[in-house]
Image (tube, rainbow, N blue to C red):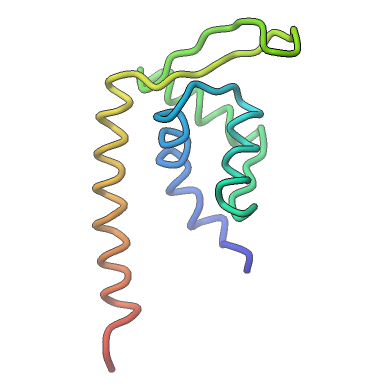
Length: 110
């Protein structure tokens, strides 16, 4: 089943911060890992991901460093900051509350 893009747009920051909480990554790596972990449910485009990363960097939730990757190609690697980890915990709590309340309405007994 295809997921409505409006549902995903509210959760992309949570998804990106979650990926980066496990390891530092470069952009394309995030796109492929998000797709893999979600059984291709979440297919971000570069044009969607990079504005999110720039916003997270501006808010000091992530830092970036350009360096050579395994293939010898220069890549920009992103790492979550302490401030980003705190924001991630807040986003997780917000997500849990949101899904709990949506489920309370959607699955309420008749």
